[in-house]
Image 1 (tube, helix red, strand yellow):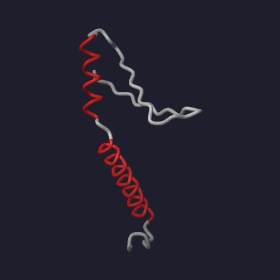
Image 2: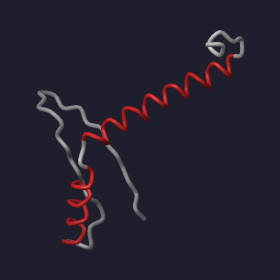
Image 3: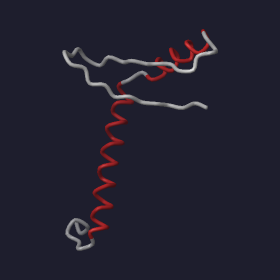
Image 4: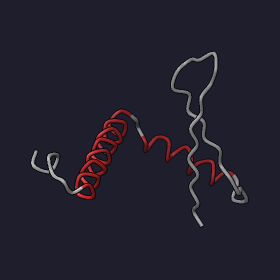
Amino acid sequence: MLVLNSDNSMLISYFKDLQEKLVYLYKLNEIDNEVNWSEIQNAFNSILKLDTELTEVDLKIKVKEAIETKTGKITIKMY
């Protein structure tokens, strides 16, 4: 509470940023508990074993039905 009432704007900004990151980590942890990531990893590894010359693997996870799709992309470099 003393930080929020402080005159030091850098200190206030630091703790606000820290709080946002903690909320983000909490949400990621909740998602991690809901999704079976090992099943996704096993599917990925089996695709790599089928064709060793692959340069990219696209993974699409449909989370709900939608008329207009909104997509988030994650790029992972493994080299």
